[in-house]
Image (cartoon, rainbow, N blue to C red):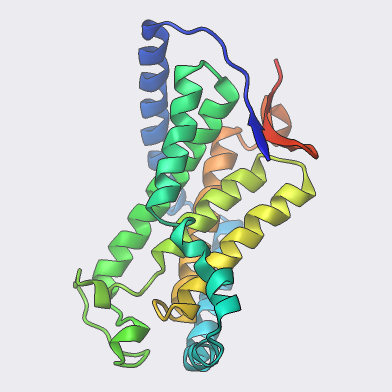
Length: 255
């Protein structure tokens, strides 16, 4: 698979101006997101209610799903669920930073905007998840203290199970990427990858099912907010998108 991007000349002044604009955009997006929580739109309320129901359902079967995963340890599953070693963790952060850096250095507006969206989505979703982790203080499965053991206001790794950070990051990135393409196969690829990350966290005894559902919901809703905000809630007005051909994947920019 070959990644193809166009390159244009750019001056240092342009780089500085673009970065300044993007920093301003980052904080504007965050401010608008914070404000949106107090607007009580029907769509927001429905999303929160649906997420709460899913999290509650997940909590009710946390033990069952955990035990099922641990009974099915195999070399095949070890390989299948090794995806969390590269997606949803630090490598993902390096990747989106590189994506944005490419757009800045080579004056590629489409890649730059896509990189900025992923940075905004991961940044704000990550903040929400990190705060919840330390406040809730839920015990991880590997601590062997059960699904209902909590030590609030704790930053020890064994007590930062809720929500899942990998699930948050992977769904935030996948949602941004999926929203920037009309190719159904790319959309499926994005969400398949993030779903495998969710399963891998349970398989590796690092999270309960309800942890991963919560992290996924945070990443999904923040990713959607960021892309809708960036596109002015009118996707038909966007001037760039992901594309897929038999030999390449890239960003198409139109003017």
